[in-house]
Image (cartoon, rainbow, N blue to C red; front, side, top):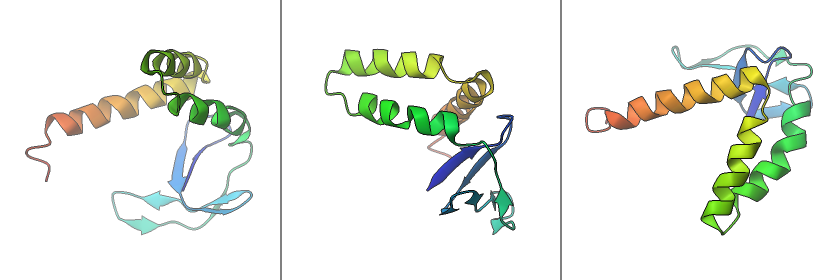
Length: 102
């Protein structure tokens, strides 16, 4: 699975990693795959932080894990930071209505 940002960081592609610069783009509303798109520059910053996020997530000490994750999230590019915040708020809204959303 691949989560990739567009070069300007304003579009998020979630799909299956196909090739070095290709990602399948899925339209969630229509449940259909769009044609391949080339995303340039989308993975440099994320790939450089990937190991740090994985390491922090695996930290056994809960307090240390939380602090490390907070620091990593705080240092995300601005658009990525706000997109992550939006996604988390959306997931919280879904969870709040979990008895209805079955």
